[in-house]
Image (cartoon, rainbow, N blue to C red; front, top):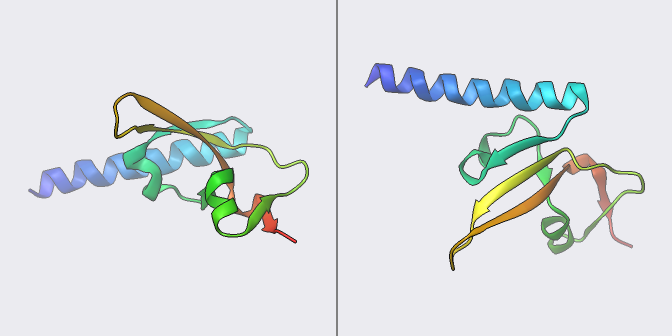
Length: 90
């Protein structure tokens, strides 16, 4: 069991390093649904932000893509922005 925990920790650290390196290099990262909660920075889609009363700031750029399984079958994709890329809707 200790070995499994080390593998999980290693995978989480690798994901965080990958995302951070993409952000530093100005490249988009690509993650799966299960990795969404393990991001080292807070990110949202436009739809999530709209539900919370936020809009995208002018000039904001997407930082990543998030692939997820659709309940009816198939795959869906969401474009992720840093949470700091949004402002309160007026």
